[in-house]
Length: 337
Image 1 (cartoon, rainbow, N blue to C red):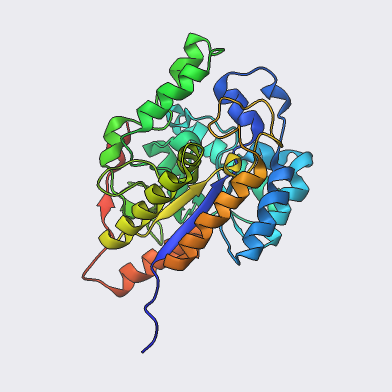
Image 2 (image 1 turned 180 degrees about the horizontal axis):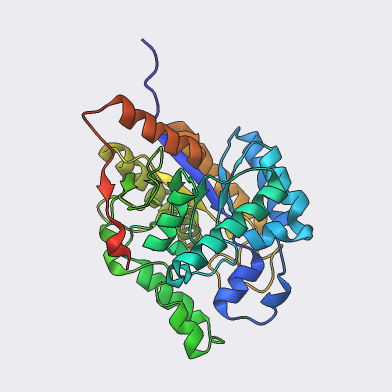
């Protein structure tokens, strides 16, 4: 009897750069666009190669345009990883952009990423989980396969309050721009399983725009991506293990194929990155974080087939087309306003 096939799990990393954290936090000096992306590539590529994983890196267009990052970003694509679009300016208030501004933002990032990596992006994640009908319509018109910007958690506003509390240098108008950073309480009731967006465009696409939410713990809707696990692990490794592993077991039990999110600071510690002490876990060094990351990757590999987000989206569509009795659920984007 053949072994039972493991459920899919997509793994992605939002390559939020040093300057983007400084900008959102209101720290001076971000305008010179300091970067740790070459260091990130040096640290994470050997781990992914050792674990035989291909994941998705969501890149920011401005970073792709910077010659200082070109070699490291191209190395991600050359290693066989999928490259996704994370906007050009990485502004978490992207949902406030007009349709024309969204088009320019996404297209300029797409072109810069192509020039740097040789890959055309087919997936998008908004900075700070920013999303709007204008963004979705732009993605569909440009032929994107999937979006991955929804974050169905009830803790988004609490995370925003913590972030703004730590952002002492932000003037009132800048704090207002960040008023929907990490989402709203009502976002916690959004679906955990993938669905398609019901959009009205003048040119119907050949395939639907699939939404793959960032997975949160089923039923409780609390975050399970590694930044939160690191916060727990700094207090108790045992508690972090129980929280993460039981969250993934609950996903398997309820038929949720997880999409797990990583960030650069899940791996880069305070020994390699300075000036981000407000970020949880920066009192730990890179070696400590690497051990934790490898431990959790090993757990994921034991229980899931890990794929990049493009492969996850294509598998979702293939299943839907093969099983006409269970079509992919459809959601109207009006609730994003």
